[in-house]
Length: 487
Image (tube, rainbow, N blue to C red; front, side):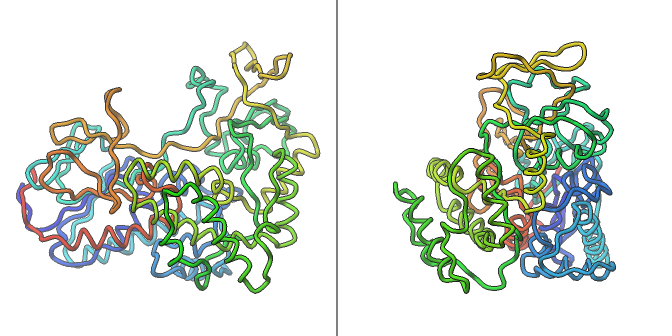
């Protein structure tokens, strides 16, 4: 088929896809937009089916940080007010409300594009392979059909749960849950069950929220043995706090890069109106429970003003990573991530209190990562490295997060999605978010949001996708149209 305009195909139809979709401009050159996703367009997994109508699973950041447009942080605020919510930039809402917002904004923009002559389609299937054909592409689907494209946006979400190796053999067992979602399945477990939750950060806390007040005994563990930090509020900064120009001048390969970054953060914290030193805002290294208690106390006293720097810190670290080649990127991430992840993945003080109260009352306990887990007739028996006795659990819940989507160049101008021969390494996404295919005459494939997770350190956040979206949409519109044939 020969096209006279641009045929944009989104692989994935969740919030990351919608951030780019909202940036596509009406006009005759935009011939069609096709969403390829087995799920409905808009909400995705995290804000859609997994949390549908679940008032207990709250969004981990404020509504200003969940706006689908980076140039309009108040878009979500206005949406909430239009639908009867008393909202401001710092409001936090249940996750499914974010899904509702995303679906509605997608529908509104689809109607705008239709009025200008653009065909909007949704194909309920999975994309399995992209094939370069001349200057264009064909997206091959799980149902055997194909969709032609001049431009492709890889917007696959977080769908593949991380399964710890010690639990690999349990996948498919009815008493083993590979994720805590939807929460309704955990709420239906028999009261008084003994449950092992593998994970200690956001997903694991969702599991605790679903399991509380039901008389369960819950043991928590993770490979790191570390909780996320705790903060009182995670807000959109009304004005810059960090010295962006000085961050841009850092020597990213320096052995002192960690200390160099800390000094800039320390100076920024001291320059804030309250002048509280950064070291007085964060807990000291120590055992997980002691550190959790100190984190909660700091947050309850509203001393965790380091959280005001998260938005800029993430954006700066993501931008710095784009300047690097793959090996340099990996080295920088390996240096910074162990020291930054507990703050960037920080939890609201309400969840911190839930953890402390659960540990103090005894319905939650901390254990080491098991070295072995065996199935028994009534559940599981777990062996722990430093405990002589085995422990029995009725159910096990994995809450260790999700793998970022990966893409593989298998030769012949073909790119596969999340599947490849064992000897093929995943594609390294370029600094401008393009996804290369060797031998293809053009590179008009972009990744956004979680699909950039192998390149961008913190890609799962809505605002990160919204920032990427502006650049990607500009690149889509910048190229000449009608330059090739799609078959």
